[in-house]
Image 1 (cartoon, rainbow, N blue to C red):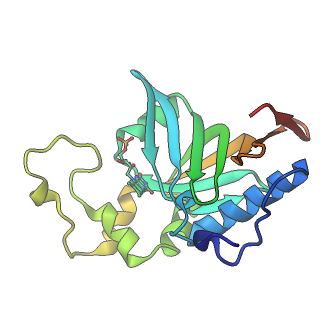
Image 2: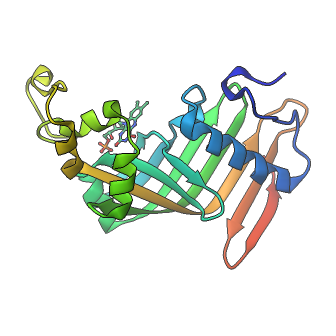
Length: 201
Ligand SMILES: Cc1cc2nc3c(=O)[nH]c(=O)nc-3n(C[C@H](O)[C@H](O)[C@H](O)COP(=O)(O)O)c2cc1C
């Protein structure tokens, strides 16, 4: 039976062909961009700041296996922008308990601000998403009264000046499928070309 969050995708019951683990990862992550019902829609993105590892959930806006990148949107005023510029190493992790599949990717993050990438991402965003970027003060500012920072109706387009696009370019993709009769874990790495290997789960 196809699990409800990924209805429409033909997912196998077990994985014994290593190339299939990459093909299915591609299907799941491509589907997750538009499908908010799967937990793959909101992966955890981890990076390194002055005090150590810092993780946050972000909505997956684009997945491209051929070019090996993921796109995320964020507030340019957030401290993590400066962190990414200092140390761009990042890891993306997502797991959906209904599918029993975990996907982990490692790579680097590039910050885009006020360029053709942000313009096309902004133009493709919904009014609801755009509204978040009009909040005064900017993400992570210490405040005494959160009510004062609730989103207000105003000129939504003004938020563009606070909008940033993060392009996460990955060099490894690890797939893990949990199944009581035998877990399957596969690592795909790209140096010059793709190399795939099974790992002990
Ligand atoms: C379901 C969900 C989706 C989120 N999506 C985003 C997002 O797309 N971009 C973003 O910057 N923060 C997003 N957040 C908020 C972040 O997890 C985080 O709290 C915020 O970005 C501040 O993180 P920082 O202190 O690491 O900058 C989301 C949180 C949740 C729970």
